[in-house]
Length: 536
Image (cartoon, rainbow, N blue to C red):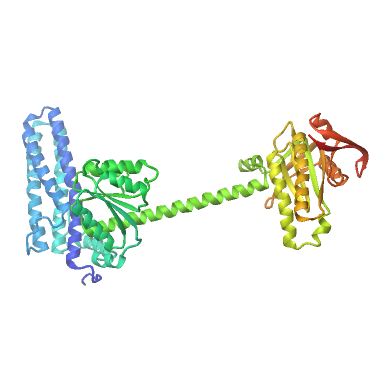
């Protein structure tokens, strides 16, 4: 039964693909034969086997001729095909042209092997036998190519029938539609901004017309200097760059584009009349996305442009995704630092799971808005929250100003501490400087709103325990008798006054103006000597 193929796998298309496939297979052993011959000639010169060098050089010339012919065929699968010549006839002629230099190599090698056997030069003879085997293998590849053209089932010398090879190539073609169909269906994936750089006005015009027809926005430049000015002044998705230009070469333009952070992300396709490998390699190494030689195939150019733009679009999307992640990371960092001290966050990221510190001495402050509980019953929920937010936001700002750590809010009460999480030798002074300004904040807001509000503050100094509790809604908190005493100082204080303990009085020294209140009875603490803070 004949092979079942979709309509787009025509016999001619299959034959062309088979030809290209086998020519690639023929090229590899042909290069191997040439390399092996070069090695044999070097060894013959080193061993002073001058008597065989003449024949080896003739073989090398035939090998060079063979490789040049195969290289031409690989680059152009229809090279030298005559008008009205069938693929089968064309392949038979190719077989003859390929076998001629190869038969010369094989014939000379057989003669030399016989001569060297008589002379006892085993090493050189062994290399020549390897060469003969490689030549036989190459002959088998050539026979396989001819068998495929005849569509018979001849067995090539390297194994695998011609029919099997045809099936292999046909299977690939089944998945690839003819270019005329796929190109028409594809269209332009992304309308993009493209800069065309070429010193030839006709070339610029042709490229501009093609790109505009395909839906792109096009800007042109006639030299490298103008191209760089445009690239730095505007946003482009792709640059088509000529290589040979006066004043500044395309290679220098490419180098400067890739050296600048502003333009290094723009893909560049070099389009040049230079087809030497060195130019291609240097441009790719310098950062070019692709390299096409003039005159270019319009369909191939369209495909290369589409691929380059698609990759840039994917890279841009990746960069935006990374930028969004970075933004969210910074946002999360800010939120976390609003909950926990920076040093505590760092310790948690370093792997500490239990954070608990015994602080030898710290100063604790409690501030309560007097009368707010009664007032909140008269205010709407929105106004209540807004009112507290104004007060506590101002307190937060002041706490940050004096490097005092806000601990938490409890209803209308505000708690802060100095000397944690890092030790501060002037922790009491910081709290004493903060407290009067907190009273001023409440007094100002009360005046502005005509609300009868005042604050009272209590301060105490002593040892505490500080740490993080919870695993999800975690919080940095402090515990100990010092905290309880500071709370009692606040509850026993007077509206508009700052009451502090004797321990805080001792820690302050003579830097602040204090008024001795006297000895008062503090619930749970007994009799305690306390002071009012009047100012600095």
